[in-house]
Length: 491
Image (cartoon, rainbow, N blue to C red; front, side):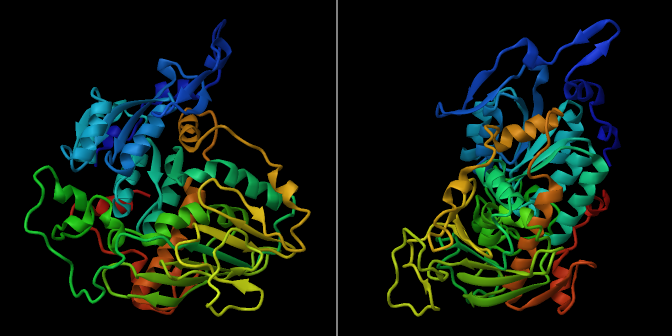
């Protein structure tokens, strides 16, 4: 399909990737030699990047998903000064939230179907941003990669384990720059954790607690649900058939769109996929966790077959990796499902009525921000989400270590500029699919355990679930509907 686009604009991209090109006796200098740096500001006036960009050094960007989160992604990519937004694609052109993006980029072409966009202007596109519902990331991304386009994809990378597996292969096959949008992975969170592992400050970790106890969209819904809800009419501006993409035909409901898709097993990855990418990314990469061997749901409140629980506690078991010991990562979500924390944990309102283990306390509801606690051999560390760094729990082992936690490389290149620089051949992305796809697969396995409310055992070598046939089938999810099968054969 669309083979005329598989060969990219290679001549122009090859020129962009070179820092200097010898043309006979003429030597073309890179732009930073000719021009000084300038400040790049976002829409609020905040300086977010110092960069050098010339008109012929910018990436021609097509943006898929331009309302809600997509609008923010477009804004942040454009604010770097390193991208021309040449095309906007959304299944709901004409909706209030997409109109704003179109007004910001009036010269960009407009499309409802990403396939038609590539047919019409694929030869002009260098890179694509994907900020659509989780389940629809994969078709857009794999087609863009097959056409030689660099891809920036919001987290979590895919809805299913198998889709992430295909994208790992695609990244090797098509050799384009890839970045998943877990934005904090490109700032202090990344550099500090890497340094602490390299220096041996974080070592012999056997236990990690991760918590996200904020209210979610589906909290309070009827957990006795027996079927999907159905709306009487589809909004006139919405192309519902294209919204479904490879998903089997499905009736429309207002609670499937505008961010509500995150609530449903079929369309989103719940709180785990939404926040896990901002909480687990550092330790997953630098402790080399890979994929778990077992996921055990020890608490599921409000279980049903359609949308995510009101609260969940999931225990992920990771095996030994070289000299590193087994690790148990416990995930907590739900407003009243708070974890036990070390009694030295500062800044908490303590629930004095809660029963806890020795040396531990429980915070009151709604007083704990999303974060994590990492229990190492000699040190216990706590951290927040996104770019926020770790600090030592001030027990006897943590008193003298705090100054060492601030000694790490600090970069002023944000996640968006990192991607665009990679697309221009100037640097490598910090959250490429080889790193971010296995992280997303951890979430996909966790959501299967939530959906079935059963412990699942996973074979890391064969990448199969060994104790439950239905769970193993859910690694692939629904078979693609007619006309979409080829997307799953591209890599």
